[in-house]
Amino acid sequence: MADDHLERAILLAAQAFDGRVDRQGHPYMAHAVRVMLAVDGDDLRTVAILHDVFEWGTITLREFVSAKFPKRVIDAVDAMTKREGESIAEHVERLRASELAATVKIADLRDNALAWRLEAMPSPAQRRELVAMYRETAQLLGTSLDEICGRKVT
Image (cartoon, rainbow, N blue to C red; front, side, top):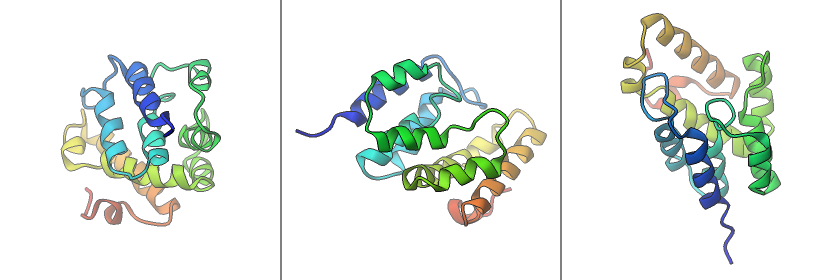
């Protein structure tokens, strides 16, 4: 019997992101789904759909733990979750320790840097700040934002 953790993750993410919107005012679940569809395999897709449930969603640790995901998924979602006061370098160091998390982070960066999403940012200053953060994260992952996106990101 196949593991149903991807299906459970989608339902949990839908609950966590219900009513939540991203910086551009779009349903947050749309970002999570795009990231999920950008990776292959149940484990990667499970991590992808859940990657922001703590930072942008309303899910509690108790609800997450009660869903009984495999340890490799729990560890990767934990690695994807930036801790309060944690620098980008510290966060990426934790990300790099999980192949699942590092792979999903690249898909997350690609989605965050979509031209239409960047152009819809509320202010040019916020756009510049986020692009700088995405560039730093990509560099710490051993690549570049332009390479991840397949185009020059401005």
